[in-house]
Length: 306
Image 1 (tube, helix red, strand yellow):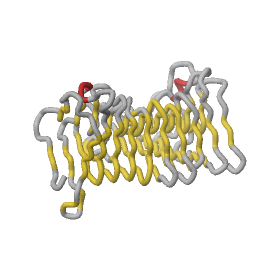
Image 2 (image 1 turned 30 degrees about the horizontal axis):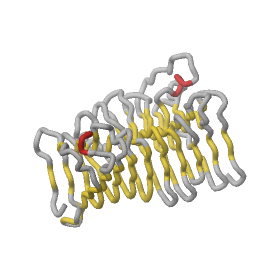
Image 3 (image 1 turned 135 degrees about the horizontal axis):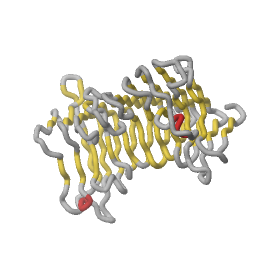
């Protein structure tokens, strides 16, 4: 792209020709000392099922480019009819604005390197900045999410594994002025590699937060979770820091820093490795639960040196 490109129609940018799936790169360039912008208006790039075959899969690469969508449904720059099955989406040196959503592809692998996403148009019911199956985070990654009603802001939602790669510096921030609900990082399994830093910031400024109800352990932190590992282990070989802030300092404002929420029959341990460090700075949210296990038969371990 040697200039800005804008979708000024009232339609999605549909890719629907049979069998055309391939490796495609959207490569920006410098104009007036900034990267060019792909602005999809109120829509997204949408890929139909028939574009793929057993021998033709999508690998989409966005490099050195700014991206923007104000899709009112909370979809991102990229979405798929089949939710991204067998697809890979890579963002490298990318800045996202608009609703701040990069990709909605629950079955895809998504890789972010040197990426920032900051919403300039907050949706009423947004998706996470990234929704995928597996996610790799490397370089400097800054994702910010907010809401304008009682929906739950989310940064990363992955059914599979989230890897914070060695040398990465990742900051995930959620802002909510309407309730105490946040879900910065939801992952089936999580690995913060050696020499990687993951900083999770929870900002809830809602007054008069209702007391959690439901009568179960899980109901106490049902939607107020900085990190939630749902179907596997959480291994910290680098540094994981959680910084919660709640306007209310009473027992109603409960935030869980790291939740292990898999069923008792699924391995769901939290392990701080020999080079790992877990920090929970709860001075601004005194009702924070540091490590919170929803079910029995799971373990919390700190290896020698951790």
